[in-house]
Image 1 (tube, rainbow, N blue to C red):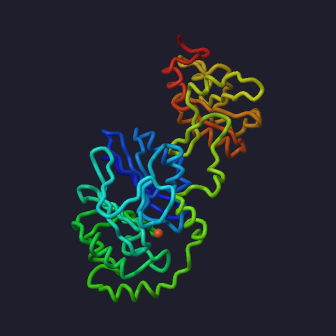
Image 2 (cartoon, helix red, strand yellow):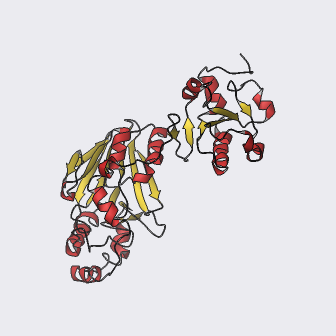
Image 3 (spheres, rainbow, N blue to C red):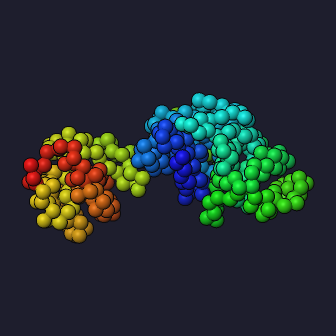
Length: 360
Ligand code: FE
């Protein structure tokens, strides 16, 4: 099984990727709207098809990427029937299974933080994804979105802390840098719900937290009730329009070799190909992309003025690593339309594309 814990800095939200590598199928739990490029790049790089996104609840602090991922990758949108959202493909209730390859998640209703909170338990009960029902040494608030402290107390005790002690618990957020806990740890050390705390203690505590409402609540809740569909089809995150590009997991825009080859010599608004290798490499056996201009990486910042600002730039090196660095340098110098040639000259040659210089 493939497992990745991904983080959103803005809202301290964790997104979880679960994949069956043999079947090539994956799920994402609680994806964040602004991170779609990152998550799609990771799925692509891991060779996984995204079957579905699962939200643990209707979030108040960030917008889900469920709808956007469905547009981009064709994934299904899953969340609780009790969440009352539109746009979902499948409305989940307690006891259902969500399959990915030969593995599955078991759906457990854990209301209390919101009325529609679900937790997802891996088939072997080695991991559970608790959303905001149970946080590391804490739990989600219960003072809005039909929250109910008494309900949360029973949800956590009966559905989560009843799992095997070794079961790892992955929360929806952490604000202090912690990433994972276990059932045994939370039974022992959760100050709100562990040890000898009873329902009256818990409700007394939760009903007097006096927290301010989340900053994004007025935007996030209505958007999440549409599973993250922008209101009236409003703007999606900016994707470059000058060529079909992909974003690497490292956040660098990339152009595929065949796409660049088709666009070479397009006239006045043609792409400028900038080769950032050393002069000796430019004329070695690999050769270079026809029409490429040689500007070694070490000289790029000083010589950026030689490049046309109004034309897009594709950077090239041997493998794509130095040229990725070059895209960052050029963006810092104010160039907007910049992409890296994916795989560099090695991929370009391997795909049999035309070169200048180099061995036959
Ligand atoms: Fe929440």
